[in-house]
Structures are given as structure tokens and as C-alpha cells.
Image (cartoon, one colour):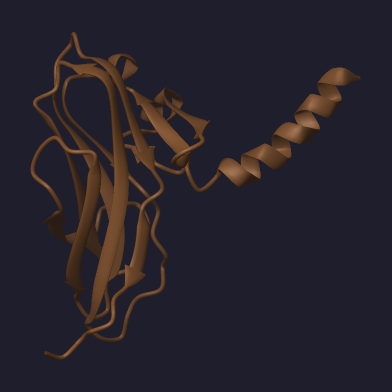
Length: 168
């Protein structure tokens, strides 16, 4: 009886947490290593267990994007918070934005990659011009993971939005 009530409440919590836990890894097996926890300062955070990730080398994570595309180029911006806890065994971390043409959500049609920041940091903010008929898809790369890597990386939900052009 009590378990039924807990399960019912968890369904509601899952809907609230969904925006934070939609990061997906290079392979479906990586999804099991992403957990979602509440933080009073940042809200819902997706935590990636670096030590539990299978394999070595670069591992990518993507946030879903909308299928709709723009009809013209426009100023765009995005922000993302990255939290590192006792991370060792990596050569770096790199958030980026992939420009997608909207024909698939699988990530295979990345046409251009914008590197938002080249190395370790905590706050990502970047302005860019989104090309015509493209959609922006936030991504995050764990670079140079070794077999002895450990720690956790926290990713907040990326905030994407259009910017107003201002004439000088």
C-alpha cells in the first residue's frame, strides 16, 4: 500500500525532473550512468558518473532539440552550468552547440559544431548566429576519459533563446 503511494508520487516527480535528465550518451548504455538530483541553487541537475561510464576516450552527451527549424538566420544564445566533483582521469570537458537541419533527432546530421569553451570551466555562455533552416542542439563532450577516471559531472538544463539584434 505504501509502495503504491510512493510509486504514484514518483510519477509526478519524474515529470518535473524530465527536463534535467534528458541528456543522452553516445550509446544507450550510457543513460544508466546519468542520475537526476535536486540542488537548491541550480534546480535539477543531471549527474554523470564518470568512473562508471564504459570505455575510454571521448564520450558525448546530447540534449534533445526541437524538430522545427528557422526560416532565416538569427542571433541566438545559450547558457549551461557545469559542476565538477572530484573529477580525475579526463583531459578536459567541452560543451558545444551542434547545428541540425531538423531531419532527425538522432544526432547524425550535425552540420556544424560551435565550441562554446575549450577547457575546464563552470559557467558556459555563448552568443552565435544560428544559420537559416537550422536548429541548435546543445551537446557536452567528456574528453580523453581514461580507464581510471572517476568523479561526477553535473549538467544543468541548457537554456537556449533568441537574442535581439541591436544596431550601433
